[in-house]
Length: 235
Image (tube, rainbow, N blue to C red; front, side, top):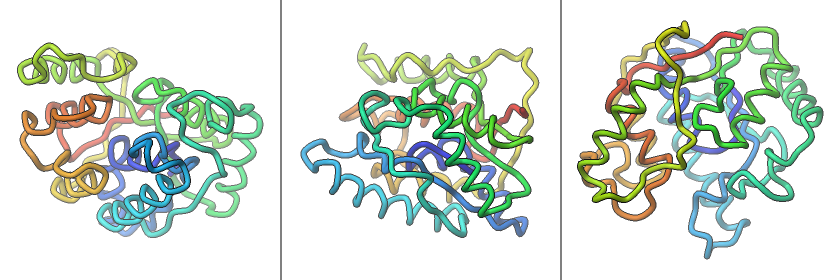
């Protein structure tokens, strides 16, 4: 499994990870950045990376991820700027993924789909690199209808405030997707709580304080689509 940021393993592939781990698979994760942009900017990038890394380790324990490590030494700066995945040459990213896959030798590779799941530039870049580096990849996708339903449910509570980046679109029902279903919804909710207290377990109307980014929108999508399943395009 290859992702751009800590927390992508929950939002994109949490149900699949739990299902595979519970079925006896050894699940391994490689992460490209420290997810620094998701922490308080006042911490600075070094401390934000340390804090986020601790959260990632706890999330992996809950999801059944046996091992995680860095794909490289990129920084999360919101999808733009020097040192980011989005700003890296594609050949460099592909080489990093190939090295990681050569070390792990996985039977199955999971990442985000061709739209990056959320349209985030880092996600898109990582997903493209994984698809070029591996022959058979499952990329996580959302259904457009679920995204629309999530926005509708959030509208009731958000008081007119926009929720999300506007890049989370999903795919129509005409696109064939594969489903992996898990059996431990509570573990995925708890893993999300690791990154932001209550984001996974509190009622939706109680998680709308503070930043209303894509993490809140994705939480609402999980409520609509189901916490116990993930959808994938195969490439």
